[in-house]
Image (tube, rainbow, N blue to C red; front, side, top):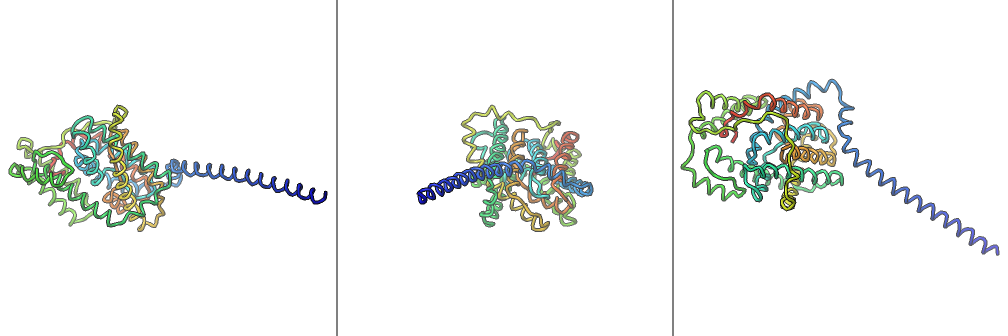
Length: 395
């Protein structure tokens, strides 16, 4: 009887311990799930932490850096939009939205996001398969592509897959950048020479079309374009901090007006609409087009995130800032979603503007927010003057 009693007693104790352990495991899993949700929501609370830690001493250096970057951003945004065969104002809208949203939700203090050349080229090659440049459908699909890129980036960040960018070799990035540079330069020759050649993502096709129409070269456009290149190089030799691109664009516009180059056949950007970025009607797009663009959005996302994190890491190695790649993915995702909804197109981190931002003394990512607001003010007040910029100068 004593043995039976001991067996039953210890069995009850063991079962009670097992029940408690199972309860503990359930509570632990519940706590872990709550922790995961909390970690995910912290990415969206990034602006709160930025503004909470912001100091009045940061305002002046951030504002000076923002003015410097805006001087570079305005002509770049217009030029990169033209690379994607989009109207100039689309580039400015994307620049405004990406600067503000990525600045508030990103991880790097000096990274500046907005239109970039490589992504613009990928957007063009992706959209040419489903729509024709200059049509309303082309503009809608550019916004849709930005939203898809943003959703993919956001999901990667929330899933904590930011570490994946570490597995992309530098040789891949260098090779892609070099190839994109060649394609961009080749596609811009038609604007430089003012040739009636349609856009093509194929290098061989573009070169063939250029060769066939080369006798039709418009010499005033070529002279103006090459003069722009020479002047930018001169400013760079004098002092790299001089905003050579903006000064040259202003001078090119003045030359166009003074010499009346419009009557000689030189093309210009044209009037830019004044106003806030309008809401994009992407909900009217058929679902079959969304499916066609999904695979292309994945490719653009991969290139954009790798390029962005490479730039952010390069700057962080000098500032000693500790980066959160997942937070940066979330920031880039929100920036692209917002840009697509407000008539923009896919964006990413810019090496040129990030370097300018860092060299100008930016202390926090609020400098990017200031940049977006400055560009917005310029669009609302000076948008009409930007229409006199000659296309050969932008090319």
